[in-house]
Length: 271
Length: 328
Image 1 (cartoon, helix red, strand yellow):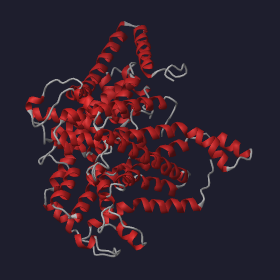
Image 2 (image 1 turned 60 degrees about the vertical axis):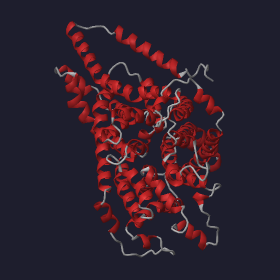
Image 3 (image 1 turned 120 degrees about the vertical axis):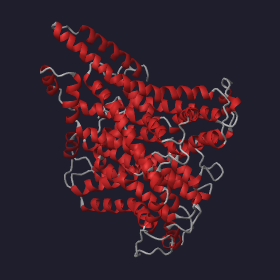
Image 4 (image 1 turned 180 degrees about the vertical axis):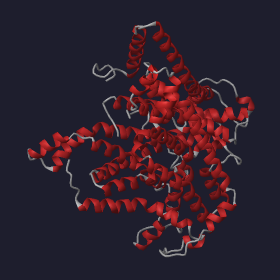
């Protein structure tokens, strides 16, 4: 391939980056302005930033929704890893690989519209009293997280050489020890990537939280929408809340950038 | 196509794999009694590793979907406890004559067509632009993925603000240029375009990333050979690069196509399906039927039809990926 990149291309690309990121910059700067100032036309480039919107949020109920988001996303990640990682190891090491079935399963749970799980879970939760609970959210997030963990971790385990584990077997170690002491530590980067992925997917969820929570367990993405409805025109607060839920996600995704395609196409492509 | 001998049908290949693995396991010689008991223990441990995960997966995915199908065969209404009864295919018959359902399919068709085509064109163009071994370009790749990883709610909120007259900088800029300043989200002809713009912005990076990965794995020899033979840049692109990228393009298209059917937060936040039913896609229509009008039974039938459509697309995707597509 051509090894030289023309300066024009770099310039065009830089301009495009600026254009694409404009809406993001727009909402972030808006969060540091007072409501009135944010919409003054013509827009002012220079303004005295204020933390007013953030202070409002921290003093209000939004912190609780943020906590709900963090708790449910973390719990479902831990649960999906505890259940999924040993299974992934088995699919990587045992003779029965069941790749086709696993692939179809992962893909179809990823492809199904959320409402396909939303309706039955809603009905079941109504009967079980799990509506508006964080437990309910943690469980429904497993519908997409668990097969994702199995799919991604199997690919990572495939990349860990077996010879080390075989040496451990000869030394009398069982499967559990070979798994915990050798395979898991060696695939630590994969583990971290997978954990970040499941965390992000759960953190970004809007639909399930909209459907299955009311007030107690509301997560941040749904809480923002409620600002819009009941405290109308508090756009500064909306912008501040949006910035708060967006920043951790953007930071984490850049960490796992290399694996984004793999995660987002789980089930269809070999890692 | 299904019967082509070069590519085995997917189900058959699963069956074949099960048969050959069973053979392999049964034929494995037990070298010594000690080794045999060790490998038995190992197999038992593997079973203990897999059973919980598969059990939970069945409970959280298979059972709910069965429940969905059962619900679609009832006239279940959340406000009427007596409505848990069997009515067979009545919901599906009603669906066939439901003009609002067919309208939602048409709206979805337009949304999918425009978002997927635009994402392909823009994503591909930027992938070509960024395809080079330069540090600056790598940084830009990271910058471009931001829209795609943001919470969809935030994407929807940003574009809702940008498309709202009076408070939007977009509106102001149009006014400055002397262009019309339409009320995008309130205009039945423009509302869907507002959704399309938001969706294209959010997801073109996905196409870009997949095609960049594919571009970076192109073999160098055919490209160099063609250049040495005096082929123009366009000829190289048209006759060598494009055919080599075809599998990746097909996969990216199918992924975006399937995901475009799931558009929800944008429509919920930006337009609520309106004005009228101008942006009411099938997914959103099912949501309204089930959770605004409480007709869960009918809503389930809509979703079952959608699921069958997505399943068909997923099978197509698996066929497409059968042709050696790899990513980083």
